[in-house]
Length: 142
Image: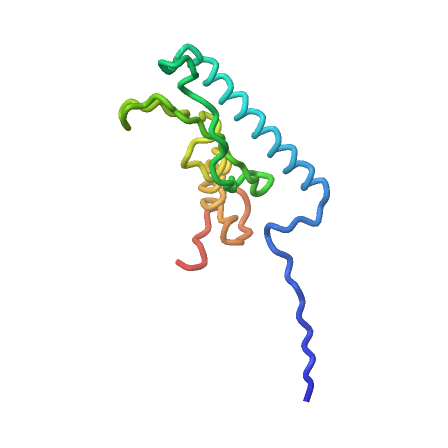
């Protein structure tokens, strides 16, 4: 006996039906990548006077780190952090490292989103309660 089932694909949170949102995310990704590339370039320019005994630059670009998602107000944005290699370090304490002020190693969401989550929680929006602005309601699990 052949049994047919109707399986419906649910819309995934990461899937966007709006082409405008896709354009905004792509623009945010490109803008962030350009800003970080400029930051790396400025770091390498500031350390250009550091050379190895054979005359080569001590600090050089060394590809990108793994791609990771950063949670933003427009949804997740994938970012790859550029890496800088120190060719003249004699030990771990002597190594010069590039750390981005725009995209720290530990960042997984934007600061604006970090500030927004507690506010939404205190107003009951994260639990789905619709008591109104400024009225705190206990989460459903309390």
